[in-house]
Image (tube, rainbow, N blue to C red; front, side):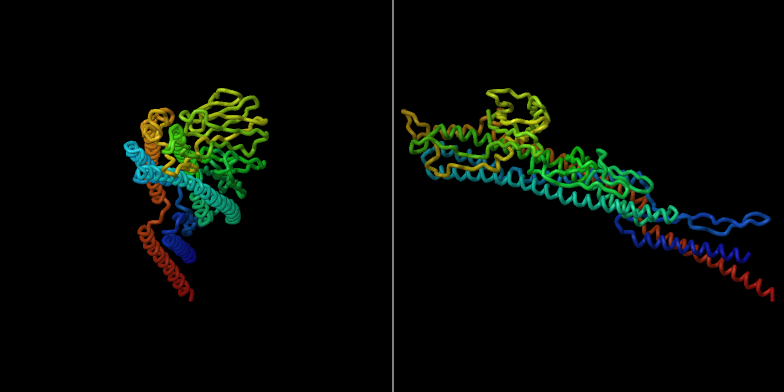
Amino acid sequence: MSNSLMNTGISGLNTAQNMLNVISNNISNAHTVGYNRQQQILRQANGTKYNFGFVGNGVAVSSVNRAYNSFVVGQLRQSQSQNGSIKAYYNELSKVDNLLAENENSISSQLNNLFASLNKLSSNAGDAATKQTVISDLTSLVSQFNKTELNLKNQIANINTELTNNIDKVNTYTQQIADLNQKIAKLQAVSGGHEPNSLLDERDQLVTELSELIGITVSEQNGQYNISLSNGLSLVQGASTNQLAVQPSASDPALNTIIYTHNSGATQELTSQNIASGRLNGLLAFRDGPLLEARNQLGLLALNLAERFNEVHTAGVDVNGDPGEKLFDYHKPTSIANSQNQGNATVKMDYNSVTEVKASDYKIEFNGNDWVVTRLSDNQQITPQVSDGKLVFDGLSIEISGNAVAGDSFLLKPVADVASSLQLLVKDVNKLATGINDDENGSGDNRNVAKLLDIQNEKLVNGTKTLNSAYTSLVSYIGSETQTAKISAQSSQNITQEIYEQNQSISGVNIEEEYISMQVYMQYYQANAKVIDAATTIFDTILGLAK
C-alpha cells in the first residue's frame, strides 16, 4: 500500500512540476508575437483492481494544448487582411490629396495668377513688364502641371517597387509555411499525434503575416494548411507551393503586374479583383482607380488648356504684326500594343474634337471581325462611328493598319502623358499675340488679350466645365475618396482591434493569472511532497515491525 501511495504522490509531484514548467513557459513568452498560451490537460491514472474494488494511482498528463480558437483566428486574419488593404489604399490616396490640395502653388492658384495678369495686360497691351509677368505665369503654370504629373508618375514607380517587395515576402512566407507543414506532419507521426505547439504557433504567425499582404483562404487537412487566393488559385498545398512573380503588364509595360503560374505552365495576370484583400489589393486598387483617374483628369485639363490657348493665340498677331505662334506643345496621344498580340496591326490615334475627349484610357480588341472598344473609366463598351476608314468616338480618331488576329488588343492613352509633357513654346514677350490684325486697328490693340482672358469662363472640358472648375472637380473627387477611405480605415482598425482583443482573451498570456496559477501548483507540489513523506514514514514503520 505504501508503494501505491508513493507512486500516487510521485505522479502528482511530476504533474505539478510539468505544470509549473508550462506556466513558466507562458510567462516567458507573454510578449512573444504569435505565441498562444499553453495549458496542460490532466487525466486520472488507471486504477489498480483489488478484491474490494479499484484504487486510483494518481494523475497522468494527457497533453499540453494551445489555447486556440480557429474560428476567432480566422475572423482576425480576415479583418487584418481587409485592414491591410484599406490602410494601403488610404495612405497612397492621402499623398495625392496633399499633392492636389489648393494652395498658393497649386494649378488652381497658377491659373488664377495667369488670368489676373492677362486682365492687367488687357488694359495696357503694350506694357513689356506686364507681358513678362504673363510669360512668367505661363511658365509657372506649365511647371506646376509637370511637377504634379511627375509626382503621380513617381507614385506608380513606387507601387511597382512595392509590388515586387511584397511578392518576395509572399513567396518567402508560403515556402516557410510549406516547410513547416512538412515538419509538423513528421513530428505528429512520431509523437503519437501530439502537437508541436511552438511550430504550430510559428506557422499561424506566418499565415497571419501573409494574410496582411494578400487575401487568402486557409483550410486544414491532416494537420497541414492548404492556402489559396480568394479566387481559388493555390499558393500552398501541403509541402508544395506555387510561387508568384512580378513583371511588366502585357497591356501596359509601365505598370508592374502580379503573375500566377499554373501547374500547366500557363500564366495569369492577377488584378485587384483576383486579390480580394491585403496590402497588395489596396495598392492595385489605388493605382488602377484614383491614381489613374487623377492622371487622366489632369491630362484632360492640360489638353484643353493647351489647345484653346493655342487656338486663340495663333489667331492673333504680336507687336510686330507677325501671326501668333502656338503657346504650348505636348506629347500626342499614345497607343500600346499588347505584348501577346499575334498579328502585325498598328494603331495611330489623334484628336478629332478636344472638347469631347474623356478622362479615360481605352482598350480596343479584335474579335475576328470587328474592333471592340471599351472605355476603361466606366467599363462601357462603345460603338464607334467609321469615317474614312477610321474609328471615331469620344473625340478621338483611330486609324488601324496591318492585319490583326482574334484576341489582339491595344491600350489607348489619349491624355495620360499630356500634363507631364506640357511645355511653353513662346518665351519672348515680343511674340505674345496681344492684338488682332485688321485694317482698322493694326497690330497694337488688345483684342486678342481679351479673347485669351475670356478662356477663363469658357466651358471647355467636355463642354461642361471651365478650366478652374475642372481642377476643382478633380480636387473634390480625390478629397472625397480620401475622406471616405480615412473613415473606412479607422472603422477597419477598430474592428480588427476588437477581434484581436477577443483572441487575446482566449490565447493571450495574462501574467497575473499565470502567477496565481503558479502559486496554486506550488502548493499542489508541496502537498504531493507531503504524500511522499507519508508513504516514506509508513514504509519505514513497516520495516521496523519486521525487525
